Amino acid sequence: MAKIFCVANQKGGVGKTTTCVNLAAALHQAGQRTLLIDLDPQGNATMGSGIDKRGLERSVYHLLVGLAGLDEVRVVSETGGYDVLPANRDLAGAEVELVDLERRENRLRDAFKSFDQDYDFVLIDCPPSLSMLTLNGLCAAHGVIIPMQCEYYALEGLSDLVNTIKKVHANLNRELKIIGLLRVMFDPRMTLQQQVSAQLEAHFGDKVFRAIVPRNVRLAEAPSHGMPGIVFDRGAKGAQAYMAFATEMIERMKAL
Image (cartoon, rainbow, N blue to C red; front, side, top):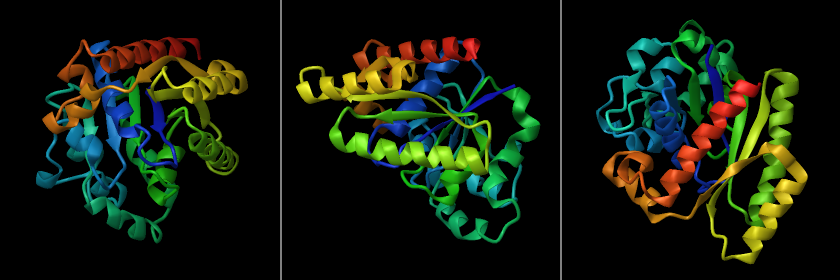
């Protein structure tokens, strides 16, 4: 049975897509059957996986509105090795169309049911807002991975996200829980980041992943080459951090 995780944060620019793409590639390299679902109309996870969003005949939009099945939508990332449900600008239209559909917040969950045995890990890249798309991701998931920078504004946004997850858990998905917080774009030379990191560990305890992803230019360069950072430069510090994170995720799932 697949373990399904949303990678979510209501704040933009915190490394959600970078985390999705690199974790998917690292899990695949570790021998895990992995699917990446791109729920962001910008399609960055799709492009970062080496898939041209402009040339798609079918996308996750068609899956959500019932125009195609999962088997018709999924493609393989040639550079990362994992499967992808790709997205493009069509997905922006799903926001409006989903409102009038039955079980509108469970469309993704329902579409995935018959493919549950195909994967070990499913990662959902959510848009940076609490939209109907994000809600579909949260209703389909067993848990949430929260990538965040160790900065003051990130702490403010974290409390909002935690409250959102609690509401979804109470009203729509009793399985949903926070799996952990991943510190990204971390610069150990900055005192503030060290302080915020320590606050996170003190408040959330073992919910904070041991792996820490540093600021790394090679991770930022990788999407322009259409490949995950761990494939683009396996020796880079950022790539090494995501591989350590994948190992930690596998360990946590065995413990659950």
